[in-house]
Amino acid sequence: MAKVESFMLQPDTKGAAWDAILYIPVVGILIMMALQFWYGQYQYVSYILIFSASYITLIGINRVFKSRLMVGSAAPKWLELSKKNVIVATNGGEKIELVNELRYFPDYAGKSFGLAGVDMAGKKRQFVFHKGQFAQESEFKDIRSRLAVFK
Image 1 (cartoon, rainbow, N blue to C red):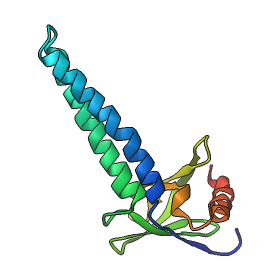
Image 2 (image 1 turned 90 degrees about the vertical axis):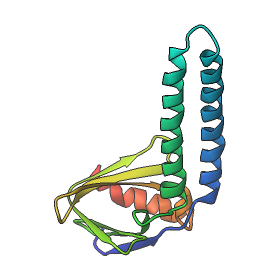
Image 3 (image 1 turned 30 degrees about the vertical axis):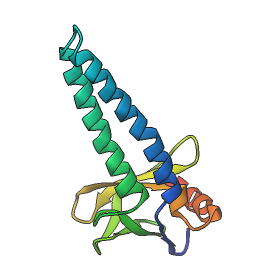
Image 4 (image 1 turned 60 degrees about the horizontal axis):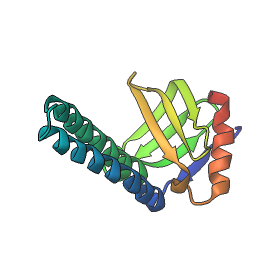
């Protein structure tokens, strides 16, 4: 990584659709089970199930809108790699330079990866990038190989 490489990100609509297909039925099943327990003998279990459904709904909304569709000011817009640091620009116009404790977390399926590090202000930042956010699959493989030194 002798030179600076820059990667523009794009919304991953296909991944967002898959995430919605997976999250919506889970939340629906939890709510249906909560209704069954509410009118049954173990009414207290419905509180736990409603809490779980609410929590999973918030996780799904965050994953679909912030991570996949890149909506919001904290969502990453482009990524710049150099030998010693990584710069992530957000939709809000903020450039976050990860300089300390930079860590790369690949997933086992090879469809996404995470970056964590400390910025110039000393704040810990975390980002998740998906394969569909890159224009070509070769870009995704290239960035994964370049980030492997931070593993």
